[in-house]
Amino acid sequence: MQANPQNDNPALFEAILEPHRSLSPRGFLVLISAVVMVSFIAGIAFVMIGAWPVFGFIGLDAVLIYVAFKVNFHSAKIHESVKLTENMLLVERTQPNGQVSSWQFQPYWLRVVIEDGDSRLILSSHGKSVIIGEFLTPSERIDLADNLRAELDKLRAPRHQQAV
Image (cartoon, rainbow, N blue to C red; front, side, top):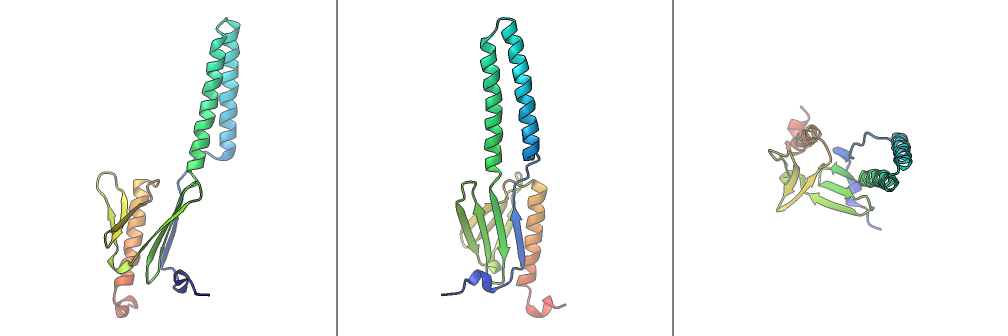
């Protein structure tokens, strides 16, 4: 059995990137309960004045709100990991369906770029590039880029300068 080269060197920098979701599962339950209750009361009011078809449309609205939140919660399962060792930078992206994509870069030649305008964080080297942290806020992407650049600068510095 051959050793995994990724595990031979300790991580000099490691980050797990996950999207922020402000609504907890309990908050979702409270919110959807309130929506259903208000929809039901409004629907009954329309039935009482003779506009009974409105009841179905109000119920459909409540179902669509529920589905929209469920889709949003599912998309929040995406995450990315960034790991820098002496020999490589590894980026792994796990999609909500569990599919994992990975990119490897040689750290000496790696460029960390924040694009003007939309502040996308791009890692590139030798004709390969990947955009990471698209779900982060612009300031979080800038902080990540600054921290990664600092670690890359330390790694690229001659050994005698690192000890100082």
